[in-house]
Length: 210
Ligand code: HEM
Image (cartoon, rainbow, N blue to C red; front, side, top):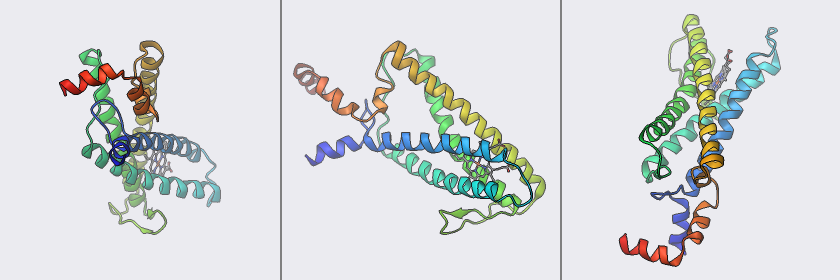
């Protein structure tokens, strides 16, 4: 019983475990939230000390730091678990592109919050760690660099939004047109469904060849 439970948590060579699935969807929600919140808040009126805008920026920074923590957890989990193989029958260039997009996601999920942190440091604004204490400044205060980091942060965020669209379109294409298990494997309950749809004969032959 214990091994069944822990095997549902962990990845295997052909499916994601529930921890990876929860991390994937939680990060997706948080990143979309940060993209929308960031875009809306910079468009808010900047009348002196506009409290609403400042509150949104503070919330954005706190959630952004939490996202950085979550991506560290996700990278650690990915390193400690087998990586399920991509759906069978894909041409080599599509396998390469899929892995490249995943790699870019990880790069951007680290680079965007770090660029936000660099921006705040260069602007002389503190960044708190979940409201508990201030994180150290990464660079000295420099108004020119502050403006550069704003641009870097913005363009990295736009690149993430574009990548998320490509990624979602590819997942839907696999699900609706190619009708393979690419998307289903990232949904809860796939492991159990796949196991119950495996006939005893298939299981026996799989066990023989394992
Ligand atoms: C993955 C995490 C994050 C995402 C996806 C994200 C996304 C965005 C986006 C889309 C904008 C609007 C850019 C524009 O249109 O000009 C923005 C602005 C901003 N972000 Fe983030 N952000 C993240 C993390 C952070 C972190 C960790 C900090 C600071 C610690 C931060 C600080 C800011 C600030 C201060 C602005 C306003 C910049 C301005 O005044 O123009 N962000 N962010």
